[in-house]
Amino acid sequence: MANIWYIQVNRYCNNKCHFCSNPSNGADITYERGIELIDDFLSKNYDGVIFTWWEPTLSPNLSLWIKYSNKKWLECRVISNGMMCADCEYMQKLKDVWLSLIHFSLYSYIPKIHDFLTDTPWSYKKVLLAIQNALSLWINVQINSVINKYNQNHLDKTTKFIVKNFPNITHFVWNNLDPLMMRQTKIALSTLPDFDIASLSLIHAMKFLELSWRTFRVERFPLCFMRGYEYASTETRKIIKNEERLVYFLDFRETINDKWADFIHDKFLECNNCDLNSICAWVYEKDKYYNYIKVVPQKINKDEKENIIKKIKA
Ligand code: SF4
Image: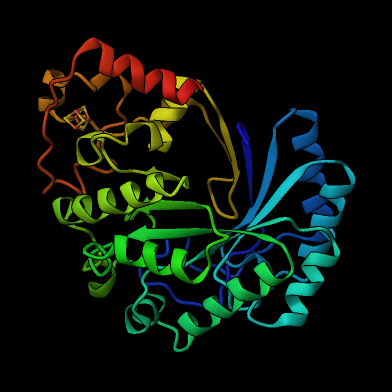
């Protein structure tokens, strides 16, 4: 997908992730509103629709919207915590309406860390069952993970665990934690990552995936912490390819159209001395939350920078 439409179908969940960026407000959309949004998307010529946040599988209309999207030849996918899809019958229901791709959120290969972060006992066991169910029905699975304090030192081990147990999974997405909308509890705030530590295990994970011909994306992580893999930065890709992302939120934000410029975050003074400055999105929420980050201006030659751009365009 290039230009993407995200539809937030409900704002309640059967997990209670401490760092959830869209905490429950009980809202959801009707079947008719979902169809209206999909039709609107069609008229705007977007490339795909993602049903998400938090948790789309709790909506009784999800399978109807998937069926409708497929009938209109729209690429569609679901982002889920896996709790409902641990049930074979539910997974089969989505397969019956031709769901072909689902992202499951897994935060750690260590059960107690995943269950602690979701604040939901057995959520680890259920997401693994969900992955198994989807793959056995030939539904493509991709893994999403939020980079945070509790998994920052083993992002690589979690990736290797998934690849070992589910070799058919070929794409991984890491989102650095978004503290802006999350609950402001002591535990939630304790999940903010140390970028230096996370960078080490993230780079190992990316190296491992690249060597096994798998793909990955990283969001909200400045380029100086992912050197060698700049091409995988979601924001850098948006900047270079001038892509958009349309998001329908179930709160005061309603519809937000993220143009490439909206993917740019907050700049440190040091960034002015960095050769990656023009293709880096800098640091998300630098002043309020990530003010402890120490960015490292990079020196690279013209060819290296051109190669990053070429790789993204290719
Ligand atoms: S120093 Fe600034 S511009 Fe350079 S890579 Fe880091 S965040 Fe990006």
